[in-house]
Every structure is written in C-alpha cells, then in structure tokens.
Length: 233
Image 1 (cartoon, rainbow, N blue to C red):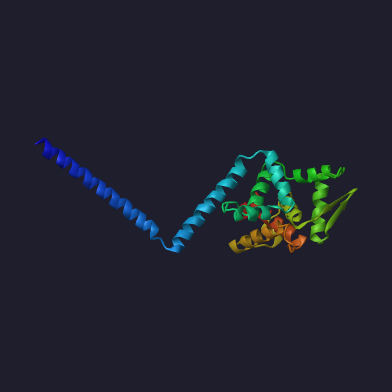
Image 2: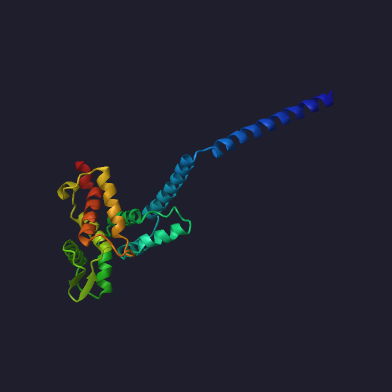
C-alpha cells in the first residue's frame, strides 16, 4: 500500500513538472515568436520609459547647483553631442537634448531662478549690468541675427543655443501666449518647435538655425508652458 501511495505521489509530481515545463515552453515560444515590429516597439517603449524616469529625476531630485550647471552647458550648445556620444556607447536611454533643456528650464523658472544664468554671465564677465539687461540685449541681438552682444564693457555671443534660452526666459517673464505670437497650439506645431530647439542646442554642428528662429522658438515653447496660455486654451 505504501509503495502504491508513493508511486501515485511521484506520478502527480512528474505530471505537475511536465505541465509547468509546457507552460514555460509556450511562454518562451510566444515571446520568441514576436514579429520584428513587435520587438522593436517593445524596446522603444522601454527606452522611452527610462528617458522619462531620468527627466523626472532631474525635475524633482537634482540640486539647484546641478540644474544651474546643466543649464549653462545647454546654453553653450554641448548637450546634443553628449547625447550622441552616450548613445553611440549603447546608452540609448539618454534623453533628447531638447527634452533635457525643457526640463531644466521648467525647473529653474518654477523655482524662481529664471535669470540665474544671465546673472552668472554678467558676473563672469565682471560686468555691472542687471541680468534683465543682458537678457534683453541677447534677445535684441537674436532678433536682428547679430552674432555678438555689446553691453557695457562685456561682449557676449548671441549663439543659437543662448538665443533659445533667452527666448524661453523672456517668454516666461513676459507671460507670452501662443495667440500673441500667432502660433496655433497644434501637435504638429509643437513637434516642429521641439525639432527647432534640438537644432538650436547643437553648437557642435556648423549649420544651426538663425538666432532669430531660435529665440522665437524659445518664446513659443515658453508660451506653451505658461499658465496664462493654458487657461485660455
């Protein structure tokens, strides 16, 4: 009787193991049977989620000092090349430069540091001007596509990347709206603005958009973010 019971138990166990193996085999077969399009979509989704996590961390966890350093590097036009280098090394989850830039600018303006970059540029140049004066001078030069800003005893290059920052900062401070700019709030227009911002940030490329285009794109992206603009939509 004991032998029969043991044999029965062994039989049940072997049956359960066989069923488990079958289930795992079916799952593996289902995953391995994914079409290339499904696999590509899954990878793209994973990458996008990792990029979003990184941006959320910058938005909520990084110190103000770290944010200031990021903003300065972005204004110098080095971020897109860093992104390319990271992705060439396999770090595909590195966020796009324009997404990083928007995250940093949104954090700075939300915490009352909209003019901090311009204060630093004035101090680094040993100037006596107010940050607002430098911001306005960069904006004026950008609109006129002048390559340099002469303010007091200092000269600042009105690069495409700095003009983009100046546009966003000016748009935030002046509470600009998309309607005032004559820009329709459509997904196509916003996508186009992000693409322009990406090009403006790329100081390592020889052909960047004109400073006036970058300044205007910054204005429009700030208008998209402005609470006043949001209440009117």
